[in-house]
Image (cartoon, rainbow, N blue to C red):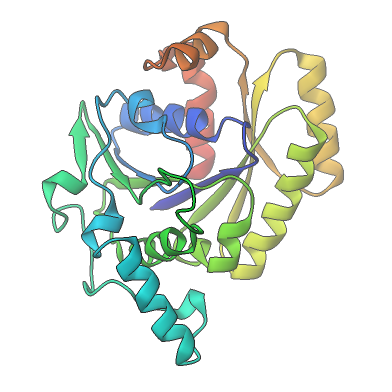
Length: 260
């Protein structure tokens, strides 16, 4: 199963994904995390890795090579969502070289790539690599792939979500986050993918949770769980170290139950 985690910047997508990866592991599943957010570099240490794996962008020849292939296909009249960049017809966890998939303590991590310098150009090539990787990746029976998407909704224009089984939206207590959850739901359904609902994050009180639920319900957005605000999680994120998921284990277990 492949699950995309979407949401606005700062909503806590990477945090929620990390908590869900730990919850799936506790349930006996084998979590594989795909870091496809080209700007956020924190996911690897959240999962307990000392360094990220080599990016998939290198595996397919580098960003310039991908851009050249895309330009050639554009000139032939192909749209970006229909392009093929990867030469491999089928991708599994075993078929990737070890330096492209980091492993530690029952977690596996794959990364599309990051923007490292000014004037590097758009992230279109990274989105294309992510989309086709997800299309061709075939998880084993006990494997769960969790995808940390880039913030916002641009990835929907590239058709990234067309090859996943579930899409969820992380919603923090803000009107912008609520509105984006509705947009993510609509775009997911337009691609033919399955929108499973919103995960409320960083909730500081029951009143705040109820108000947020009311706004989402009025928009027709289903809710699959709530993760409360914890100082310990925020402190770990500030210090750049893994955080203890046991404090929200019941909440994340419930979300995993809703997803499977």
